[in-house]
Amino acid sequence: MKAIVGCVLILAMLAAGTAFAYVVDDSDWCWQMRTEARQRALEAREVAREARETAREQIFAAKREAARARLEGIREATRARIDFARERRDILREQMRARREILRDVQRELRRDRVY
Image 1 (cartoon, helix red, strand yellow):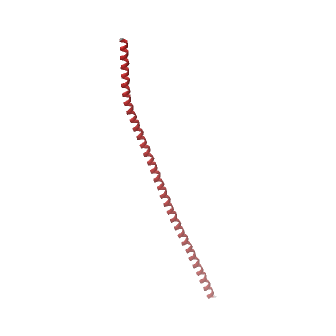
Image 2 (cartoon, rainbow, N blue to C red; image 1 turned 45 degrees about the vertical axis):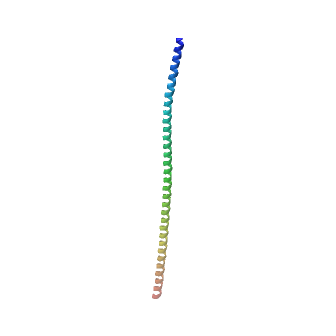
Image 3 (cartoon, rainbow, N blue to C red; image 1 turned 30 degrees about the vertical axis):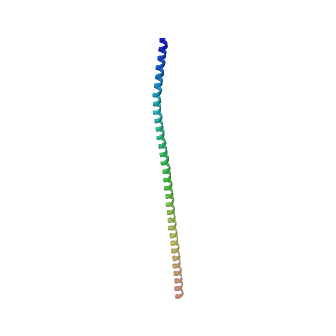
């Protein structure tokens, strides 16, 4: 009988110990799950922040490229306008030079005709 009572008492102590360990482990488990959930939420926020920053950088890069292309277009138009004006001036100078040469030739011919 004493052996049975001793066995029952030992089993009761073991059951109480395991129940207590389960409760303690359960609370540790809850804390661990909360910590893991916080960590996952923090990582998700960091990933979202990085994605936003990457998208923002891509938008800014696209805007910079568009502005650069627009300015390059303006520069190219300005260069074309300057080149056109230079060519026009050169043509006008050439025409004026040709006129002066023609006038000189005509005046020379007239002088030669007067002398003879």
